[in-house]
Amino acid sequence: MFNLFRKTYTLVAPMDGKVLDLSIVKDKVFSSKLLGEGVAIEPINDLVVAPAQGRLSLIFKTKHAFGMVLDNGIEILVHIGIDTVGLEGEGFSPLAKEGDFLQAGDPVIKIDRKLIIEKGYSLITPIIITNIDEVKEIEYNISDNIKSGEIILNYKL
Image: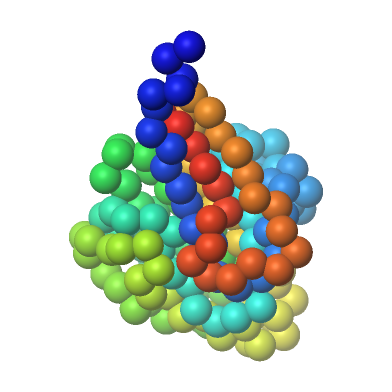
């Protein structure tokens, strides 16, 4: 009954591409949802943007992933590619720095898609809510063709 009064929050696509169900990602940590709940994107562009408004809390030393803490306390992980930690930062150029306050759509990392693919890595990018126990409801927007900034996920606290 009181669910009607919960505010709906959104995450937007951090890149253009195809939105995939997390369960089909070829990495058990993500597909089994050990890190949390979300979706993945198979990107077709080189720019990764913030999926929501909040603070950039972490850019991994290897630049292949970043974390955000949103204004509502939700924690987000954007992991660019599968096993891309092995690139040790090659092919990833941060455009923002830890501690920056970002709006949804602000540039975070530029990637060299060609280099990453040539080195044999998948660019499928999980977007995860890591503190999922805070979320009461979640709904996905699985789509074959989404643009950066379009809604990929709705959730209620």
